[in-house]
Structure formats: C-alpha cells, structure tokens
Length: 292
Image 1 (spheres, rainbow, N blue to C red):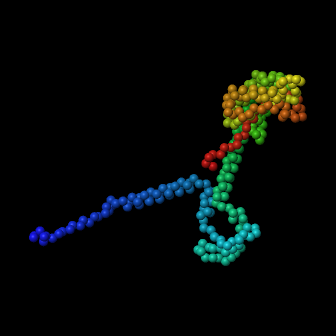
Image 2 (tube, one colour; image 1 turned 60 degrees about the vertical axis):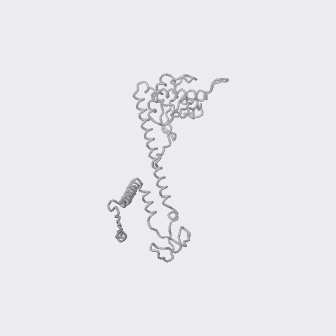
C-alpha cells in the first residue's frame, strides 16, 4: 500500500546550447573571408586595368538620364519626354546630341583603346626593326672598310633600305666579277665577302631572300643553259656560303633566279653591274603578345 502512495518525481533536464562553443562564429568568419577575397580581387583588377578601360567602366555605371518615347530627328537631335533620376518627368525638349556619342557603347570604347594599343605596339616594333637594320648597315660598311682584303671590294657592295627590308647587293665591275664567266663558281675574294656578310646578318632574327641576276647577254644559240639557270645557280651558291657561315637553314625564305629581268642599270642592260647577288633581310610583321 505504501508503494502506491509514494509520489512520482519527474526530472526534466534543461539542455543548454553550446554558447561560445557553437558554430555560428564559423558562418560569420566565412562571410568575412569571402568579403576580403572579393575586396583584394577588386584591388587586383583595378591595378591591372588600363586608364581607358577604367574610364569606359566609369561611364557605363554612372547614372544617366533615361528617355522615353524619343524620336531621332535630323542631325542626331533627340525629341521626347525625359525622366530624371528621382523619377519625375521633365518637360519635352529638343536636345542636339552627336550621333557618334549616341551610338557609342562602353564596349566600343574598350575596343578602340585596344586597337590604339595594338597600333602603337606595331609602330614601336617597326621603328625598332628599322633601327636594327640601320645599325647593321653601318656596322657592315665599317667592318668592310677596316678589312684590308675586303676594302678593295667596298664599291661593289651596295646596302640600302626598301619597303621589303634591308637589301645587300654584290655587283660585278669591269675586270672584277664575283663569279667565273658563265658559271656559278665564286672567286675566293667574293666568297670571303659573302662569309663576312653572313657573320653580320646572322645576328638578326629576320628571314632572308636571295636572288641572282645576270646581264642581258644571252648564251650561244642552241645551248641548253640560259641566264635563268645561271642566275638561279648563283643564288643557290650564295645560299650555301651563308649557310656554312652561320645563317640557320630555317631563316632562308626563298632562292630566286631572275636572269636579266631586273637590271641594276635599266639603260645599260649589258653592263657588268647588272650581274649581281641580292641578299634581302626581310621585314617581319610584328607578332602581338597574347595578352593584348
């Protein structure tokens, strides 16, 4: 009986949250880290963006006046009702705006800036290449004059600048030819001159074109050999000398035999000066960097 009257006691245990050891701080810390990452990315982007791009982005995000029911009139005049920034409507008015400003977008400004940078880069590279050609021409002329053997041929070496590049010509003179008559065999002094030229042009990275030229005097009738074969063979002989003197094979762009089609002295096509070898150091189109 006493067991039935004994009171029943129920203990309720109140659970307390982890307090300082909970996980809420982790969420706040993650948000903070994300915000800092975004902030530093913004700083990095601003530091690596050109002034033209910044101006374009600034104009893109700056508040502008919206226009509704606008009609474009003559000479780029916009006619219609405008809405100001606070949402109120302004009276209808006619405002002349140049069409090129109306149609230009931030993308167009960025594109124009990139095109200007590309053009500036190409101009700088072309000027640098021209300076390299001029320096090489001066160096080659001086080195020939300072060489006792080669200086005797200095009046037979013509160096000039053309639209295609730096042109070096070895021409024949009366009683002093570069090749033996009607053959592609070089005289020793001519071969040494070609070797000397190779040591100079070999310093440049540009490709090289070699062409051979003859005078207008034909071979005897019935011969199976003509000025075309002779000019081609002489150009190829010059190529072999340049190749063995340090000019790499991948820099040789072309070997051409032109016979008497391009005389140095058009009024005297039979003169020995028309017999020559032309070495053209080709102008190269500048290669743009991938990040431009």
